[in-house]
Image (cartoon, rainbow, N blue to C red; front, top):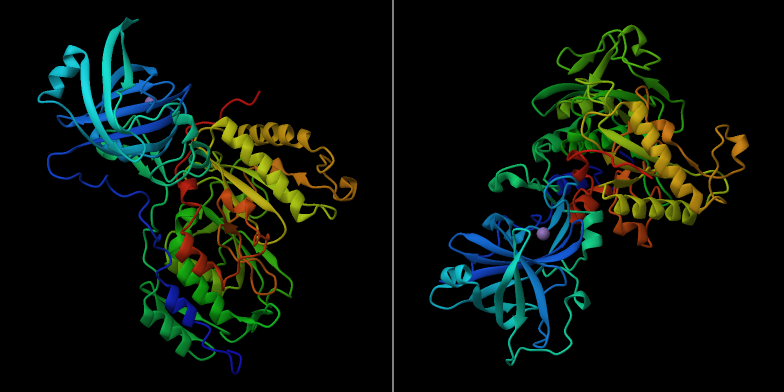
Length: 539
Ligand code: MN
């Protein structure tokens, strides 16, 4: 390590817990109400049509009405309320997205919640068709009345009204108060970057899928990181239960950023070890291509798709059968690739000088079926960062419009990529055609920024929306992979909201800063592990 600089591994000791997300994503259940009180919740639900679901806890279920225009505090207004089937209590604090084509597909925020009081026998009142309920919520307060008025096509029509009391507010309209009482977010914001998914096809206890699940594997222990710091130029490092031969630990692999010490191989190994549990879910089960820079970021790099013959026997690997559809280079005669199914394998790759980690878009068990569709916003020489952001925001709006979850990441170089997780099914031809339609539609909005020419010289310095990345033989730079440049920037997943933050630059996050970012903001990419069930048609 450079003289006079502090122990470069100290930060990894401090941050080794950063795989853990800072907050549980909404809690495992609504807080218990005071003794004897019943809960109520109102969810603002954008499904085929916007409506508000008013749900009152009663006898172990949520008795529910769908109120198209929302409840009101205005005592002179009556709202149509369609009595719908009871919902499980587990649904009461659900905020997130319901996949398209499932029952209730759309997005949901917890618009209001609290407790309610009824008369002596509210269940009998529901049967009778006249329910009195005093609500104690954050938005809804006071005495409400639900009255059944008749049937329409088998659906019970009720009216919901607020009685004249001290909580009545003339002119009060739900749509003037659209934000969640849980997160402060709007439906649009939740749809763009949901914390949770509701699988209507599963039992209630399993239906809420956490899209911000913490990393499953543990990072290296303090002792393991300390042992790496204590090794001289090389030796045997025991980490993750493996004995790893590590070499040239003091070698500089990248210059530092101005005012910062250079990045040594020891620091790169520590980074690989600490980030491994975070990145493992994105690498496991996929052939990994290494971009090796044995002489460091300033030297020549080369691509390695084949596991070298001298590689340790314990390394997980995949032997391609004669090469998958469209495969080229290396795998065409059925080579053997590294598969990072355990954290130590990533440390091994880093010791081999792999400064970049590129994983296959398809898993080894279905190598011609991608699990991601990829949008690659590839700037030309004349493309400014503001232009890249504009193109990213246009894609953001397109995904929101389509109801497709998609996840942006800074490439660590100049551009932004967007990953769209898809259930195994479509071929690469299909995902490529889908991304092409999407990006051409977006590109039409700003023709002055985008070229569809392939040759770099023919592009006139304009950006390319490179849908051809969706091909079996292409690989994607893994989230949190370093890039060979001063200070080792990383490809860093971000939230859609962060597109609007002033600090954002394509190489803003480095191996030295990503840990703190994960510790404070969590990993915005966890949602790519939950596939969109299908890609909707683009008209
Ligand atoms: Mn609903």
